[in-house]
Amino acid sequence: MAQNGRMALTHRSSDFALDSPPGDFLPREIELRTVDGVWINAGWVPSRSMEESSATFVLAHGFTGSWREPRVQAVMAHLVRFGNVLAIDQRGHGRSTGLCTVGMDEVLDVDAAVGHVRRTSRGGAVVTVGFSMGGSVTLRHAALAPGSVHTPEHRPDAVVSVSAPGFWFYRGTKVMRFVHRLIENPLGRALLKRRGVRLTSKPWPEPPPWSPADSVRKMGDFPLLVVHGDIDHYFPVEHVRVLEAAAESVGNSQATVIVVPGFAHAESTVDPATMDCVGKWALEHARIS
Image (cartoon, rainbow, N blue to C red):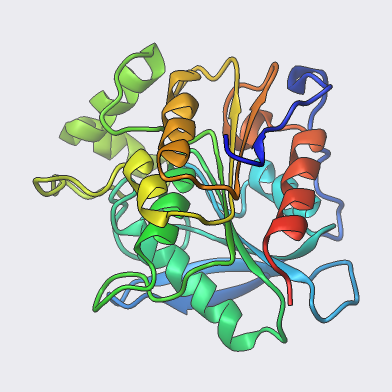
């Protein structure tokens, strides 16, 4: 991988877990509106640092997630050591309106959050951080922005993708075959609705949206961190290798890939040392002004 390449870790993710948020961890609820008219519910937590130039992390959860979930708030509570955190409920999740499109239109949700930070902050970098489905969304958002009407308008200063797929329609693991069965039939969508996920029945267009690997190629030479677990039971390491190859193919000298020993998948199993790597990498590579 160009100059930054792979980052070696000395810990095993399975040996640690993120601490639960403290009792006084109370994100401030805000509402954002996307360019296509969807209301996005979000939680804001200011940085522990008093520096006005602190970075802001825009956090996008995985499929079925919400910023109110303890596992997501644990990530928020860790990232706030490095900067402000704005965590969103993507469309069709939690208290946001709209219908989940499994990563297609969710780029507009991330864009609304980045735009809000640009308008209201006193400076500093904006770093998007996505997990699983959210990881594919942050990659696509960085590649698409700035765009035209009904496409993302606000590019971040750096992007972090954790546990994301490298390509679409993957059915190579038992859990992903189950996820596809849920998504593709009315009974499955009804079950997901009971879990708080309101899923569209409208199929993706042909051709489909840019894949995560396509997006990595499209974003060019851009600050990018890809994090993946070596025991991911949703998307095995072949996915991170596809993303790594995509960055190499366009000579992205600002890309870093971390494969974490003992890390399974997304917010549920990410550990403090890995989140420290995310925070430190962001502060180093996001060109904070």
